[in-house]
Length: 77
Image 1: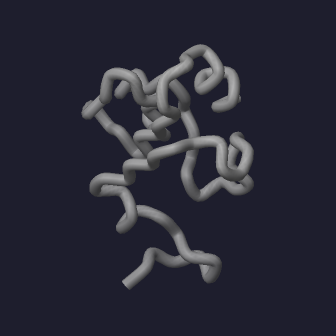
Image 2: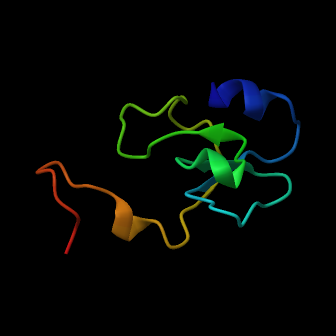
Image 3: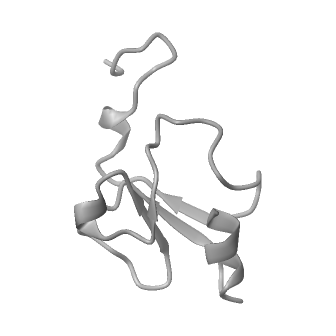
């Protein structure tokens, strides 16, 4: 799924995880909320992610880490 979005460009591959309304041009913007109109709707707690290892050059996770759930099923402290 992400691979398709990444392959459409010959530019450096960049993911913007949990983008919300802060879409970045030239990035694959990913969010769980469809109302933010991301390129890809994905819950970041759902693994495995829909992309191959080492398929991106940059990953931005601005203001999103505190929302991830740990393996024990609780938010990190």
